[in-house]
Amino acid sequence: MAEIIIYSSTGCPYCEKMKKEFKEWGYDYEERNVTENPAYFEDLHKEGMFSTPVVYINGEAFIGYRPKKMKKALGITDEMIAANKPTNTSEEQSSENFFQEPTKEMFDDVYDFVTIGAGPAGASAAVYASRARLKTLIIDKAPASGTLAITHKIANYPGVPEELTGQELLRKMHVQAHNFGTTFVRSNVLSVDFSNEDIKLLELPEGTIKAKSVFIAVGAKAPGSKIKGEEEYTGRGVSYCSTCDAAFFKDRIVGVVGDTEEAVHETQALAKFAKEVMLFVPTNKLKGEANTDELEKLDNVKIYWNHRLKEIIGNKKVEKLIIRDADKHEGEWAVDGVFLYLAGLKPGTDFLKDAVKRDEEGYIMVDEALRTSVDGVFAGGDARRTLIKQAVISAADGCIAALGADQHVNKRKTMKAQYS
Image (cartoon, rainbow, N blue to C red):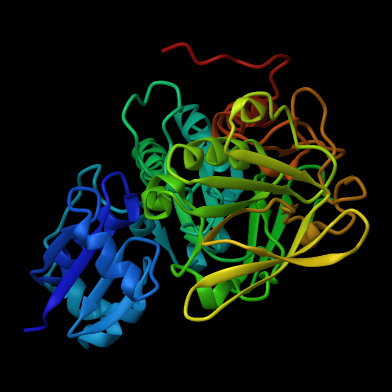
């Protein structure tokens, strides 16, 4: 049996996921919580590690949430895990299990409502549409990779008082949609044909889906390229979650890179631990309604506008950042770590081409009812331009789009609200 040691921290969602998965795989482990025992911090610091979880399997270190690599190290496969895992049909069932491969019957059928995307907008739309007795289908090529799915912590979603990961919140939405009758398909929409007034065509690699109404909820995606050195030093000074890793930087110097509300919030959180926090804002203003009023009251926080991170360098761990300032001059900044909250998300709408009207950045143009330039086609969530990106806003978009689709399919004069 393998010797497994997990270095965890209190409040780290990926530590909890990793522990849960080892139990599901049938492996015992020793847990070393760095929050409860500061001596464990030193264990990781000596190895140049500044993040949790860190898992040692027979002496080999795995930094961060790396289940695929760990399964490979243990010599286990998904088939082996599935064979030993008890059947579970409760709410705790992974929503990914709902997603199936497309079948011939699906291509022969005509759906009342199809949502492209299974994030909070698409999932919410499916709940309302299927509850309105519309034959509903969700299509998503990577349901566990959306913006909400990879969010570390959600603590402000209305009606959900406990903290949970984005994946856990999304799972609850999928379970609810599934229970109302939604069908889930894992596939990629390559192109669309909205030229027919009655039936919309969605081209998948496996065939063509037909729908009376469509909701485009594809979300947004980050640029493909990472900062030079980011991958190399992830877990060794590069981090993305203050809840998980802030305590590692007690009395140290850290940088935060970003221009969003999240970057501001994380800077505040880090200021409680670090000796000095430098917020590098790539432009001359923050996105949305974020502001630096509270940060400017903190003595150990400095804000640098028009400063772009170009490279992360070090020796086994992060030591310096290469920053380009407003005058295009590049310089080295000594730090012990850097937290990245870079924006630059773009809507994943290129596959639509000219099927619906989009603006210069690819956002779909909609009216107040989220109707696009094509009758029976709606768009919402991060696929449309909003003042700020929040899961609750995307979920509300899903509700509006579904009620609009119900009106369209059933040829109602007005939308029909769902009160009970």
